[in-house]
Image (cartoon, rainbow, N blue to C red; front, side, top):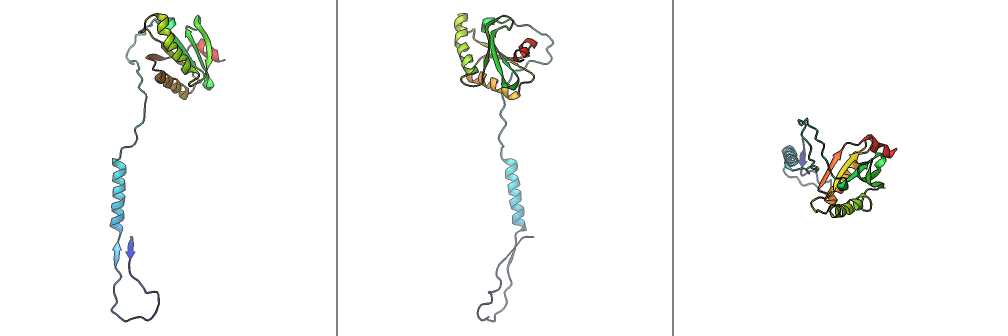
Length: 178
C-alpha cells in the first residue's frame, strides 16, 4: 500500500516545547496509482497505431480455369529478369529472338529506371500510336529475394508504367544467370 507521511520529528534541535501531540497525517495513494494505470491502459487501447502500408496488386481469380494466351507486340514488351544475388537483366521481345539483346542492369536511377524511362518514350514513337505504350513483364528467379521484386515494383510506380505484370520465369531465362 502506498502512503505519504507528513510531519515527523524536529530533528532533535533545541528545546522541546510540551504541547499536545498531533497525529501524523497519512494519505493513502493506492487509489491514485490504480487510476493512473487505468488511464494509461485506456489511452493505449484507444490510440490509433500506425497502419501498415501495402501495395495494391491486381490478382486473377482462382476459379478461372481457362488459360488464355494473350498476344502482345514484341516491340512493346520489355522483359525484366531478376536473378539470384540481386542480379538484373533486361531484353526487348522474346528471349529466343530478342529485338534488343540481353543487358545487365543495376537498381536505381542510373540503372533500370533510366532504361524504363527511355523505353516509355521510344515505344509509343516506334508504334506510331501514343496509346500503345510499354508493357513490362517482370520475371523473378526462385533464388531472388522478395526485396528485389519490391524494388522493381517501386521502379514501375516511380516511372508510372501503366501496364506491367509479374510472370513465371522460364528455364531459358533462369539459365541466363548461370
